[in-house]
Length: 400
Image (tube, rainbow, N blue to C red; front, side, top):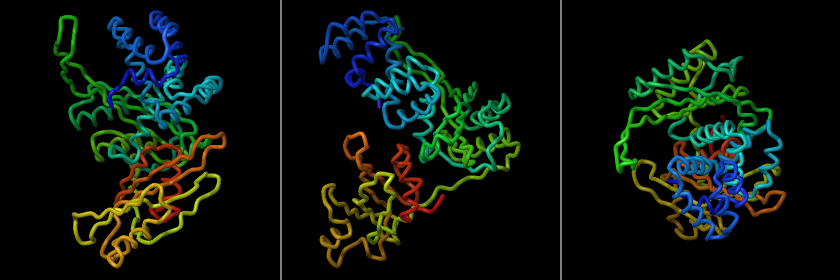
């Protein structure tokens, strides 16, 4: 989704914008803030930003666009995880009632940690997705969290070069992400290696001083390795396919463990959705705050055919189970319980109680697809809770 400046300005507290303009020494924009308000303020700011010299306007767009990448739950969790050593700043963030305002303050106060939060959020969004594979290493490396040296960088550069000819230059950053385990425990220790690889040159048409002109540039490809030192789990996120990610994992094991054979692929857990052909209980633990769990949609396919789907869905407001509704609608032709049909897709509607400090109930819709597809890559705390704990307890997937 492209960046939308007016929307960003509307969602950012006036005080946060004023602080940003003051610290970036953009006095004309700060003056507008003192003289206008509401819709007039947003339009005046947008127009004033467009009138700025190219370098200042581009810096504002760059700052605001990067801030917008951390305004979802994943980004906010990554921001806070990077600030464990800055309790005063964490306290200040709690006083701001806007995701944009919180991310903007971290950009101004801790730019290095802000960049690492971007890297952490990028990696988290790829978990459980098409650019992700998980590996198990034989014991966490004793020097985890330190640079792996030029030879490691050269090996990774060669892997990308063999993949598509990219990798002329490479840069690797590493940092710890305290409290970044499956449930965010402060005792967890996760080390991330972010890899920036120079891609092949691309050409684009853009406006210059003399009008439209072609410009050739070299974009960067981002990849990441995340090592959970407690469990010995290594997540590799990168374009290039499973084979490339496996090669990266083996190179990491060679340099970090001294044993390339000390890493094995963890295969994704397949779902057991046919358990939902009959109503099942959904037991939960009271401290997790789950109010109710309900199956709202089931997709069925003939067991001996590759194509064709039947979708059965109940409304959000109903208290009738999907099985009861299907029996009432279809009678003896009810499809869910028929042995010749298998469930290939399911949606669970999970309602969480309001937080202790107030607010409304939180609803999480979890979509599961055979054999192991899902939207659990969202990686909010509640999604991780469902993914790592309750799908196993409910018998919908195998234990890790």
